Image (cartoon, helix red, strand yellow):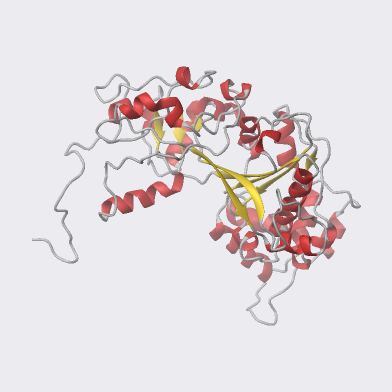
Length: 433
């Protein structure tokens, strides 16, 4: 008998037969062909991961739409707030700008971590939608007005003019085109980028997602995986058609998520100052007839996560926060100093049609090298202005410069690092050594 502590479902939206995994040539394995690297959406085929009754046997990819948000979808269905077989109505959801086809969209070596045709599945795959196959977009393109306090301040101080086209008023309203992208990994291509075998990549993904995706092992014929991670957002200032025009100057900031600084303005790192500097420079470039782009990746805490990041903060502050021990604190807890691995990052540049970068608003050697290795030249690298660096973040930035980050200042030695110390907790927190 059902009780409050032992609830029993009154309805079961799923089949009584639970399919834990599939194997090639089974009755539930009749995938719609998917040929990564084809030059047209039709010959490439749709990316299908749904396990719904009408789609289960047609799946040609592993994983789930929505990245980490797929778990919230499961909760909504389990709690009765969402129909298990719900299908979105895509009326009027088409992109606000039709990005022109780029040769890279049909190059399996240049784009391996996103679906180049994922922004307009109604246009490309309406026949499958009409048949009841659950095809979903993985890219959305919209337009908006944004307001950032530092940009409003730059307008007030006269650094950014009000042009009425990009910067609309003294309040700091700025027009922007936005592109949201969910990750779609072509596993052979991802393996090649990291110099590993596809087999080893699949095994690592299987083991370190707690065995959540057994078809990584049992379905070697399915080459596409939608991982349960965050994606990226592109912010384009000025007409979006300029982005792929090689005759137009491009200013670019590639930024990895830092919630504590980006949103709540913690001063232990340079993330928000560099982000707002990048936005300002992107706007200025667009106002001068060029193009400005900021790309925001969800890679919190150098892709180590916020829990690990805060543990590192504790270790730094309680152990004497000096620049010479900056990376060591992270390695002691996470086993590595950085897991952002920029090898997949240039895919979005290829998708946008970017063939050169006039001004790269980044000091990261990893980002620079990943872009150049993909055949995109960078003509100028722009470090964050020294007066924008918070005092407590000198530990971070000086340690990074010493490790290889680009800088126009004097070289930083090991002895210099030992002298750079962050703000302590002595006046308001426990301190141990």
